[in-house]
Length: 358
Image (tube, rainbow, N blue to C red; front, side):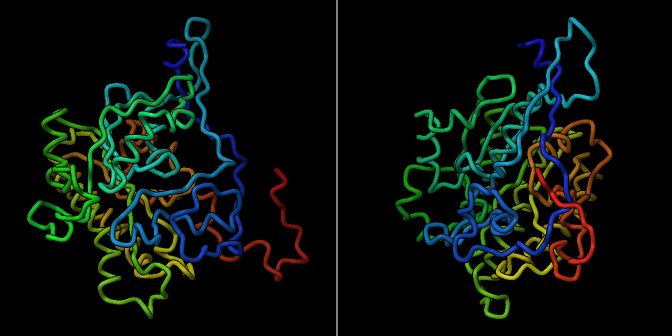
């Protein structure tokens, strides 16, 4: 098994078909709760935000899982014949993934792919969700989701409490400091977490931003308040700038940083309101500028994924195979970004357009 695992090749077993835009209808007030998606109609609502009352004030981890997507490793015995193709090898690399609070999110999917390629995994979990997440890990609730292609379980070396809305202790208001959901946790601002990771491990190689929140996401942009709009940009966009700013001193040269965006940054997605479309547009713009600044000064690549199947893409972008890719929005959406109109539109009724029969 060890020999086979050395020839790891990440593959996706899904037929690639340009999708229809017609089915994209956000699912009301629980945009972050769509953890299992089986149709395009549901997929649009799962764009790594939450508007559930419990999460109104803070960011949460991305919560999308597509049941039709299977990520596996295809291994061959190295002693019988040479490995075919290129393998993604992240052995000896360390990744910090901000925004993992369960086993259904984008962050979890990325962690699994990075771990399957050999990387050591550290995660940052929103403080109020920390106890539940760690308890679930200890009790084996996530064991089925932790299974890697070689049959082993993904190991998370350390879980850090994190609230990326606050850069340093001085930024935390008194009502948060005294909030019982934060009781028992310390050193959870961005600056403090970066310092703790440095003290514990010295450095990292991969930084992943997988978190967002828009407290007024269900409101049309015309009805969004100033506070709601700014809160969306703070939690969903500036949090990435802050994260990279404080972690960049401990990211090894040649390292990679990733975030997650959504096609609402450049297309109209009714129902994706509250300033979240603006936040994603800002995130993509910031990606280009940060790629220039972090690349020139620290030799770190910065990219963002407009996502559906994120794990494989993240592993590739974090690997030496993507050493010349930076400042890019990588579309991993089965061609959605290329479509101008849904293929099931009535205007195409007399055309012989291939359909997905799988």
